[in-house]
Image (cartoon, rainbow, N blue to C red; front, side, top):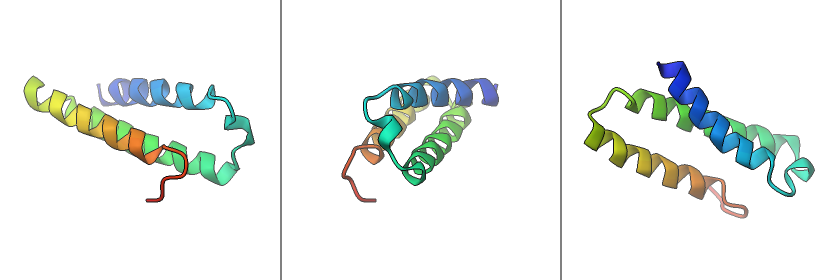
Length: 77
């Protein structure tokens, strides 16, 4: 289901972020921004779950790369 797929994706990404060194020292505004971006990505991943497998894998790779790039320290969007 949409909730399961999106929730699992968000949980995996956010668990790594929250457990990363320095997370506790980040300003709350930065944390909220990270969470918002991950949730948008999670919704996209869940929506893609209905696509055929070949299109799904390609789209998921694109989303993963985009989220990783957006979460890199020092990057401006």
